Image (cartoon, rainbow, N blue to C red; front, side, top):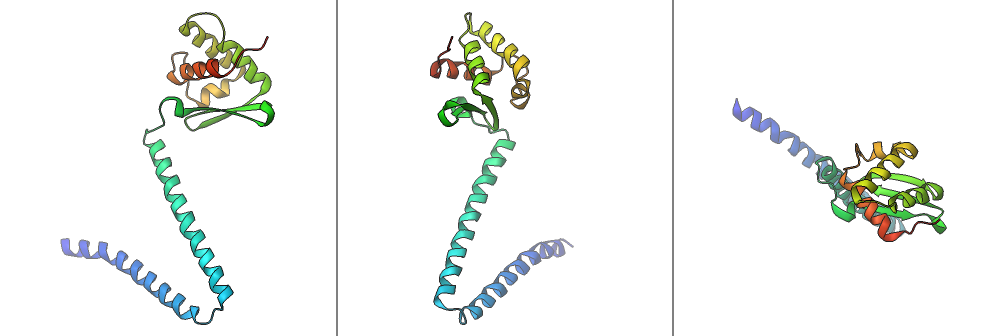
Length: 165
């Protein structure tokens, strides 16, 4: 019985290989009837398919890494992307991206520059986000002001942006 299981596992591989061989043979027989411009087109299409397959593999490996808990760490996991003419901002933390209007972002910058210890400042920022942008907290899984990404975001904002009066 063990041999039957082993053989049945190998059969689908052989079928897939034989199917591929049949398709390759069919393509070879058709090539004889295709002119030069048609062959150029097919080569271009083949290159696109190969490229897309490579991109899909890369995207899948990145998705699997995120699902497996291998999310980015440190400053690479946080990014602030200014919009055209700084009219808006996108804050990306790991895989979550949130849009901020200029007014919202200025409010966040003001709170990040508030007086107090880093713990007090984190609490103020968390409370501001809770009141003004709860969606940001939810999407970034920030349950309290002790969240490491919140602290990193505050430091990044303080180092790159000045509060306007």
